Each structure stands twice: as structure tokens, then as C-alpha cells.
Image 1: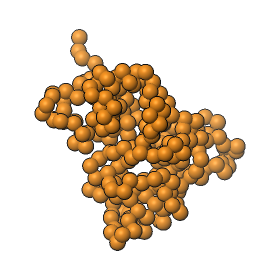
Image 2 (image 1 turned 180 degrees about the vertical axis):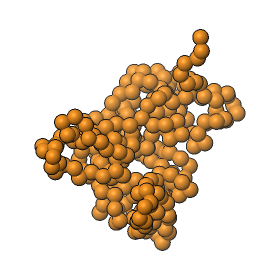
Image 3 (image 1 turned 30 degrees about the horizontal axis):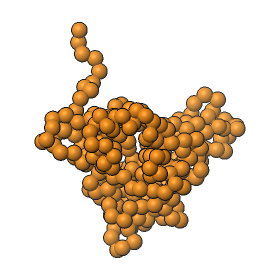
Image 4 (image 1 turned 60 degrees about the vertical axis):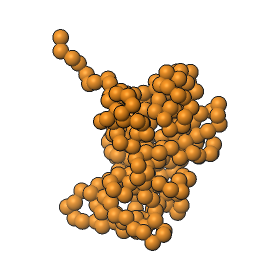
Length: 252
């Protein structure tokens, strides 16, 4: 009988370069399970606990910690040590009174420590939107989750104010929309891909070109220190209008 499904194992050499693991000491490494983030853009919980935070010396120890429900991801206890952690996810460890947000940097993804108040919400970017049954609007977010917007009048939806690439501030674990940040000139934003990944600042220019896909629009970001970075809109994640909604690491 032929093999079904993909491989459940992963060697260290082809693993994402930003994973903080030794490539030649051992052969195998934890492979993230299918979930909200792709293999290239995530960290397994076991690697977060063992190689980044140092709360475990071996995968067995990390697996024991996770199986006891001591690690919360976006306010929910995750009991699989291969669960994928990705951009803007909030990791909380109640017993140690510590919380972290996954943030992009020039090395890939890092953990930025945050306080209790900031650990009560996360930022999600709208990747797509559709109209479902009863005229409700479904927002598809970057972390693989969806939010349904109730519409009073399907023929004249006054609630239809969301656009793709806008950012939502969402409470966790209730997942209620607290704030809506429209993607536009003047916003604070962080670059999530390309050679300038991890840079953040204010959007000072958005070059709109007729006939060009909106995601491929060129955007210029000023970091406030005299440096300007240019990337495509698809790599831009708005994090606030007048000021950032989240704390930012000093060096990325």
C-alpha cells in the first residue's frame, strides 16, 4: 500500500535558518504540526521552550511541560510540543508570570517579552474576506483563524468597513475585535518579509499604480532616525495609527 500524507520528520540541515539549533550535533529536529502557520514561518513549541527560553534541556522535558497545559498560546493551553508558533502570537507562562509576543527581526522570528496588559490581545492582519450565509462577512486572518461579522441588512451592509491588509486588535482568548487599523499612509508598520524584515516605522509613501495588484504596491517606511526602507505592501503589517498598539523591541 502506498504512503499517504507528508513526512512527519524533519532533518536539522533543511530546517528554517532562523531556528536557533545546532545543525551538525544531531540529525533530526521537531517538525511543526500542520496548523495556523507554515513551516517556513513558525517555531515549534518544543524549540521555543528548549532552545530559546531555556526552560527545558531536552525535548522530553519540553513535551512534559506542554502536556501539562502550562503553556498558553493566544490564551489557550496547547498540549502538543510540535504546535507551530508564528507572527504576532502571544505565548504566556502563568506559573512564571511571563508573556512573549512573536515579532519579526532580521534573523527571522524572535520572542519579545511583554507585560500582562499587552498579553490580553494580539494583532491580526486581514488576508481575505468573503460573504457567507445570511449575508455575514467572514474575515480570514493571517494566523489561519476567521472572524464573522454580523450584518443587520445584507443588501446594505453598513458593517462592511474592513479591507484586506487592514489590521485588527483582537482580545484573547475571547477573540473580540477591539480596534480596527486601516492600512494607509501615516500608519506605524513593521516589515514582515524581504531583505528589510524586522524594520519598523511610519508609512510615508504608498505608490499606487493603475493595473497593478494592491499587494505588489511599493511602500516606503521611515524609521524616524533618517533611514527609509522600501518594500511591497504584502510585506507590511500595520501596528497602529497615531502610535503603535504594541511595544517594540529596541533592536531587531
